[in-house]
Amino acid sequence: MRSEIKFTIFIILDKDIKYILIKYNKMNFTDINFSYKSIADCVVDFLKNQMELGYLKPGERIDEKELCKVLKVSRTPIREALIRLEMDGFVEILPRRTILVKKISLEEIRDIYQVIGNLEVEAVGMAIERIEKENINRMEELYKKMVEALKDGDIDKWIDSNLELHSIHLHLSGNKILKDIVSKLKKRLYDFPRKIVNIPEWSREMMKDHFQLIEAFKKKEKAIAKKIIKEHWNFKRSYPFIVQYYDLKNEKSANSRKYI
Image (tube, rainbow, N blue to C red; front, side, top):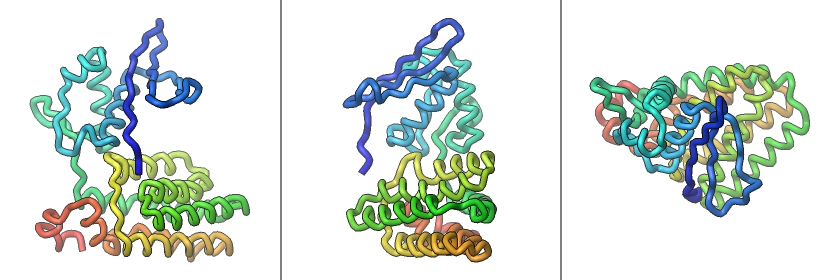
């Protein structure tokens, strides 16, 4: 299970250098990641972290003035950050400056599945020409971790291993834009907030896909690998599990014919 990490945020301005220092509790000083970012970048990171930890929940209002006070920054970087989050699908900016954490809908999930499915099919096709034995070994290690995670009921670990397994063929595709788009969409699906829900039948289906995908990579069977990953992201196939995972039963009853 993912533990909630409390942190203190300091916005530090040193001439033209702007960066954020995130100081984690129970963390060694050497573990802290110092990086140079704009103030808007810092605000984006802060809000995403609050969403991921569940402190900002879907449907909740974000108070722009309060955010300025808490982070001690002007409204300009706050607005820039919120516009970027809206473009990425994490918030909604409504008339009269009402800003809400965006709820995920069945329609949005369906669209994300279609985009990720098509992009991962392309990634698998490119990756299979470049894959090496060490990549296959890493895939098999991650598959074993996923098996262990399911046995232990550690769904958080299962999700992380699942994402890393997919990241191998995304990285091997050699297409950074494709990889970045898929990564951003998966964050929308899984991380804001991270849902720790185990649906055994869905997990079994996904594990079967992963096993078959690894075997196809081993044998360099491009057409089979592309078919597996296309079916893996088939929205209709996963529809009943998606409704359960995201607790969208009300939306299902109102729009069932639209999505299946």
